[in-house]
Image 1 (tube, rainbow, N blue to C red):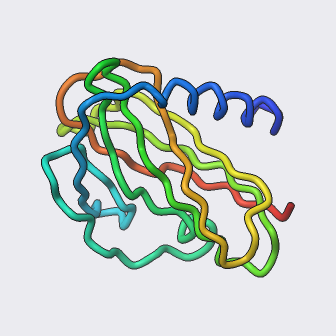
Image 2 (spheres, one colour):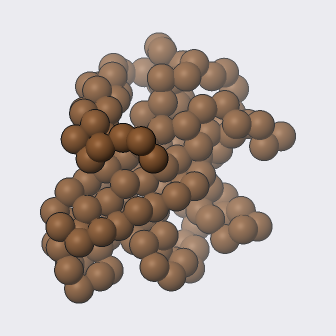
Length: 146
């Protein structure tokens, strides 16, 4: 990973600003066979509760997956809950795939200085234009003490 922490934070800020644009979105969810919570953009479905994986991956949950109707950019709403005993920084990688599993884009989300038991909501916004239904999948979570 050739980015410095500052570069990643800068990327997240740029992506967050791009995510401010409004558009029509739909949300829903599904749990994949690999145990990773996948959220699919579809009409008004509630996300089922899935068992949280161990380690840093268990601290991250996708709560919504949507495609902006104006830009065509996919976005995942990510909830980070610090289950460790130390204040921590997080970097979360998300990919957007179609129904056949083809990768359409990816994005990153980050949050710093998350206190133990604290919850933080962040967005993983892609700038790749997509059409149709997408599924959001967390592909990697990095957590380290602040």
